[in-house]
Image 1 (tube, rainbow, N blue to C red):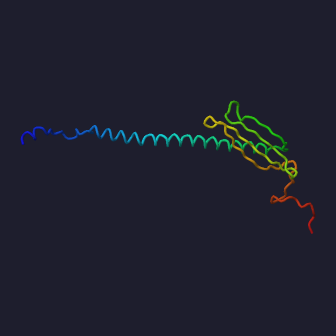
Image 2: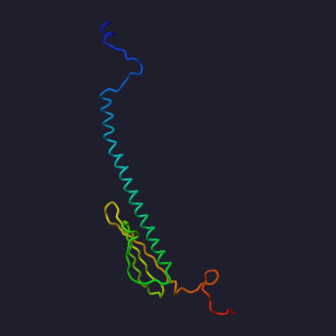
Image 3: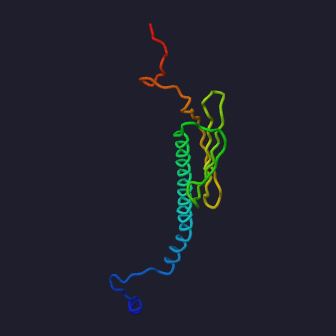
Length: 149
């Protein structure tokens, strides 16, 4: 009995540690979980960057349409250009006449690079030629042209 007491060593309080088996199990758990977590972070980062590029393209298309709205007369045809020298966004505008005089079918394409691939964002609307628009009276109504009763 005395021999079993001698073989057992007492550890001072606070000097506990992990066994080799506990360390191996924790490393295996980390090895299983960590790749999934890293994949989620990288996928989220790529998705955020792609959404940011598409949102920028949408705002640039709206800006291009606002520039066309500011013109006194709208000319039909196709025009393209870049927003800034060396920018990754380019634009192309197509203006087609419609059956209604003074109304134009306008399509703006924004071409940009996203994750090394060329992408497009298109925005289509109708614009009225300001030179042909009737003058508006009070309340936004066109003048009647008659004296009334």
